[in-house]
Length: 379
Image (cartoon, rainbow, N blue to C red; front, side, top):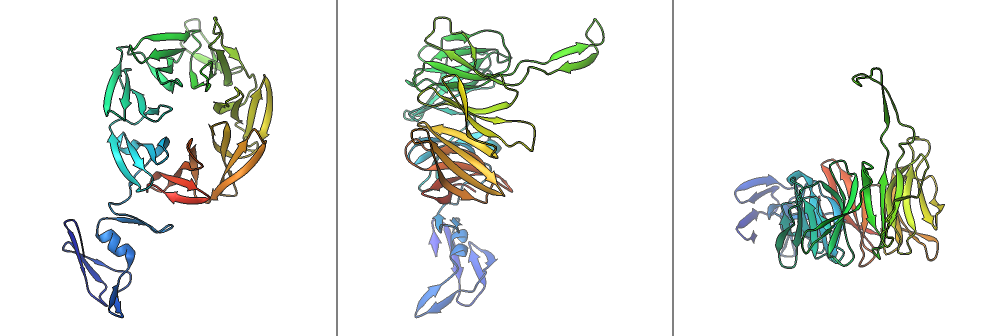
């Protein structure tokens, strides 16, 4: 049997298979029945340089992508952009063939809304945009200040970011000429988790004030204590349509606030968590300044919003379940469950597929939840 330049030889009733001159043992011996030879499928696939997914009997003729794969982002209905930390690179992955379409020598890419472009900042602080259609890379301007938390505008003409070496400002970069405009420059440090509403009129970010350091001497060389009161992270809203663009605190509670997101109606959802292991996280929504709890005291692993539907992965008794909340009907739907450890979710904006990352002994892999069935995309 041959595939390309690879040839394998096997004999009936022999447990030895010769693959390109290398002999390997078979789990079962080949046999002939009614004149038809039979051999272990997995052995043939591996010998020919392919791979097989036992759960859904999918054969990857060139083998599955192996190694740590994280941060899946949907380019279109059949293509994912995934990060490869081991190689400090990214891949465009065809979910039908489970093969790489293209490799990119950058890892922390932020995909545009239409899936046609991706942005990143290099180690020198320069902003770049990759165009997947024209297969070009363009440096945007010469500004080399620190830029994090890139967010695309809805029209794809600009990028918002947290700006400055201490993450003290919020800025927008015009992609046609590289002009950087500071929108928020209040010098409050350590802004994170920048979000933009779907209509582009509001910004959301999280900020935690610095603790107050008390010293034992006037020269401030010997630290006595650090007062962390009032340093809990808070959500800050900015109305971009306002002339003043004044940052407005939305919360004041002492809990951690993660995975914040806008709904299409400007409601804001986030996961509330504390350091108390006996008090699991909750899913909360802020509507017209009033906070409500959507899911109380659940071990929420990750949360994402797509088209105003809220997706969460919840762990209970070593079972990981993805649930979806529809605000219009105020109802929850269970999408699927698995005993494999889910670390993050990325629902598709095109259909009901959900890309997930799962922990394995060799790192994280990317899998797909489709119509209640689990499909491994990488290994």
